Amino acid sequence: MRIEVKFYLIPLVLLTLLVVCPTVSPAQTAKKKYKVVLDPGHGGKDSGTRGSKLLEKDVVLAVTLKVGEYLEKYTDDIEVIFTRKKDEYSHPKVRATLANNMEADLFVSIHANAMPAGNSHVYGTETYVMGTKNEGRNFEVAKRENSVILLEEDYKELYQGFDPNAPEVNIMFEIMQEAFQENSILLAQNIEEQFSKRAGRHSRGVKQSSLWVLWNTAMPSVLIEIGYLTNPKEERELSTPEVQEYIASAIFRAIRDYFEYQKTLDN
Image (cartoon, rainbow, N blue to C red; front, top):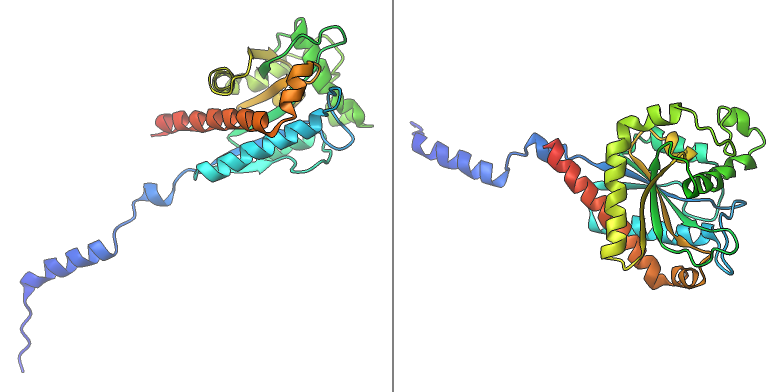
């Protein structure tokens, strides 16, 4: 018996196979996954700043968890890593080391602010990037946020002799963060714009200061002050889930938009 092969059918068969089993491009199989480390400031034995009722460590944890929730729910290319998800203490070096070990693309530390007695009228958000302009109010913020390292008995060895109370700032701060400064400022500007235009918060702008947790991270990094607990009105607002959600959604959008911009550079 002679078998007759109809060669004109072969292209049709191949076309059917291509439709059923489409080719996956390298770009589809290797979609970039960005990593963001979210750091709720303070925790455990370190309560941070205090309002009349609210503790910094509690409100920033609530906001940070919401930011992570939004990133996980509304993006598919951002991996969220928390430095803490409950009320526990870890010193700044552990937080920075975690971000470095995970090879994160962004480090976002979330805090709440405070003013000395007699200045309760001050309110609003601020976002800090690493810098050496420690003048006036910026220096006071740096001293307060850095003072947590004094909780460690061996802080001089642990933090390489860094003294948070010294007005002189080592030039190494500026050298180590210079490579990430432009992207850090870009993200900080995005955050403050979201706060003022979308979340209805009073933005006090982007600032620079020598903050240890930003200095020791090998990636673009920002420290966000979501408001002043020493301002009675702002403290009440920050205690409400609604305002916490507004603030968290603003930070979420800024991070999302930052990576959308980075994708245009990667392509």
